[in-house]
Image (cartoon, rainbow, N blue to C red):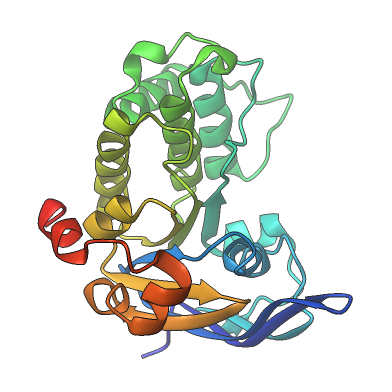
Length: 259
């Protein structure tokens, strides 16, 4: 069966510095894949390359069996692969409702038009439905600038999923979110992703989040994939413990807490 997303010998150099090398990964429909690694390990470089934000120095990127090498981010998005960023990419001067209306219009018509109104009864009803699905209805009229960080993250991810992607990539979805809110945020995201049927790849430093939500784990080190496999196996890999997550972590306690 053809993989949904596949990279072959993917590499990226910045002068004499190798940011990524020999990345060979296959992602199938419906997978929940966590990505871990220290700063500079190659995680974000990998995501930037497969989503068109960064051109690889060499290698191949296939989406549904077809090369997407050289395509711009919007072309990649329209093909069916979307992402959210560590810092939410929103319209800060607009309200939550207005951000959703714009995303809905883009998803349904691929571009905005001065001759097509955003606010119609149908679109407003759809907006209410989206906000309810992500448990952020109370923030509908608020400006994005005033939102708590967790709500901004949810709004960003909701807007990404509105285009109906087959693959969703998230860059540190719980970064900046209060400890007491991180699981609620991820529960909401995973519920929406499961409903959509999309595969999800998420970069994350919080091992509690990784252990609880990912079923497969990619561990990056020095620009390469150090380990790839079931999460419970990868976090116990000797090299991963030594070079990525540290030997101080009580894995039995971690897995028990997030079972």
